Image (cartoon, rainbow, N blue to C red; front, side, top):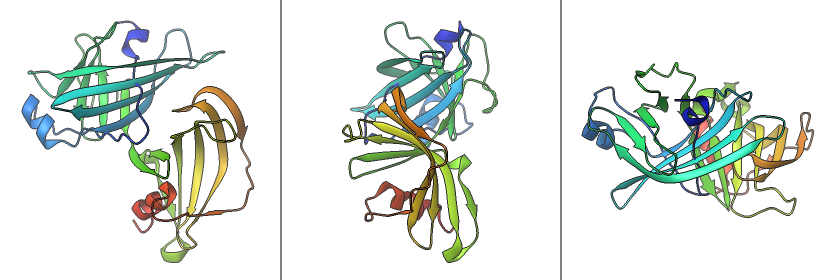
Length: 244
């Protein structure tokens, strides 16, 4: 299996949420029914002709059928994005999913908080493989979707003085007035004041930080923004991360 085939992956619709997880009890039924596997996963996998392939994977189940969506961006002088979707079939020999579709035959090992692409003859690495995608927390509301890697959330201080920081991806249901459909930013939440800042931010023309990079700032000094209600995705993230 070449690097390009090992790294082809998905596209997800705004508002769709998927979670992947798995027990170490090998078996189709135990993994599918006992693990919260629906949701979004992301990672950068190796590429033989570029610096890496930024990958997003979405897994979901509809009418008893497992579906996947894939978004893969090859990081090169002119980044190129490929999207795919189709059926995924649980295998009988363990907690693995076979992706089905045109030019698609990869196999995923499904585990708690991550999935791994398995090459021919390879075995699960426990998340140590370069072909691992990590599950994201997903928040949706007010036409926005925020995706965050919970393993990378940092907190400092306590109680009303607590601050939470993380890098997250935000998709928008519609193209904004500024012409972007998504943004990637470093967020800093002030838990006591219920505000947030984005000291680093990049805007993209398409979802999942794909398409033309419209604008980027590394020292954004705009004033803190207040939450706009409980449905605000930042308010949802604050409720999840503040106080933990």
